[in-house]
Amino acid sequence: MFTVAGGTFFSQIIPLAILPILTRLYSPEEFGTLALYIAFFSILSVVVTGRYEMAIMLPKKEKDAISLFQISFLFSFIFSIFFLLVILFNSESIMSFLKINSSVAWLYFLPFSVFLAGLYQIYSYWLNRNKKFSEIAFSKIVQSSSISFGQLGMKLVSLISNGLIFGYIVGQIINLIYLSRRVFLVRPKNFFHIDLSRLKKNLILYKRFPLISSFSSLLDRAAVQMPILLISRFYDQASLGIFSILLRFLDSPFAVLNHSISLVFHKKVVDLSHEDPSALTKEILQIFFTLLLFTLPFILIIYIFGAEIFRLLLGSEWGNVGDYAFLIMIVVSYRFCVSPLSVVLGLKKTLHLGAYWQVLYFLTISLTLILSRNLDFINFIKVFVIHEVLLYSIYLVLIIYGSNYKRLN
Image (tube, rainbow, N blue to C red; front, side, top):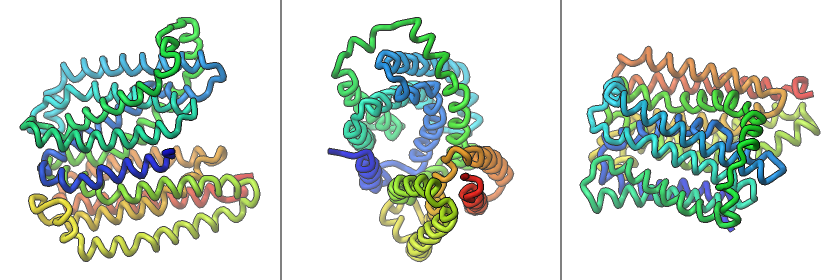
């Protein structure tokens, strides 16, 4: 039986193992185009369902859950059609603004890819409601492996441009075929019976999801993708490809550990907030410094051997990226030290602190990188590193402030 954590682990490891092959088949420019595609995809997919899929878990009656399933599907379909129309009438302006010199063909596939992402989210929440955790875990592996092998196959069997993007879409389709068989295995007719009065009732009852949750989620996702969007705007596709691939290589192992640490620490935070709130700050500091000591050897290794390591991993076409790797490693490591601790800001009385930081981060990352647009690329990355360390230090201060037992009582 696969667990969700196991699915997350293997879904990170499989693409990472195939990446050294892909970097020898595709150029940095092609990976830059993929990074931009995924940036848009990531931002849009968070709102494509109106966030109604998150409410599928809540109703006691299955008929209401099915109604929310249908609402989420309708939102996804309408949003994707609307987005397609926007692209049809504005594709040249969008590509011109982002200074993309490659073919614009991939842009027309973005609404379809976003629609598939909406379906994936809807299916995942439905399976979660029905406690089909092993299916969710396995679907992560199906998608990551299908994408990786799809991208590999696109290059090996055809000369089609944007093979990384089309391979990504192939992986999405294969995963949805797998999930569809699991979702519609029991009483499939129920999903196609539409009760308009129930639809209207649930549309209103759960309206806080599109009105409140969508905005905060969109802000968070846009902030994460802002460096990708601005590098595309102010620098070339090769620079974007180097940034995105190094971030992917360096962040993936930490992302797996981050997920596991967060799960364990979340339980401890909840217990301490009830039993011994005064001990929570000390626990946070201990974990932070432990993680900091854990990451220091990795930073040192990349500083000394980064150029050789990534020449071996990526191939000679990518040039000497050791300096970039060291700078990005600092960002990845410091985020890893702070992010698991943020579960403290998930407590009821500290939610507002996380929201304040989220707005601050979005504003500062956007302003800082825009003001740095005239620097050469290595100095642009250095400014990015300074921003991340400063903002995540503020995040840590807010976490410690939020853990104060007087505020938890």
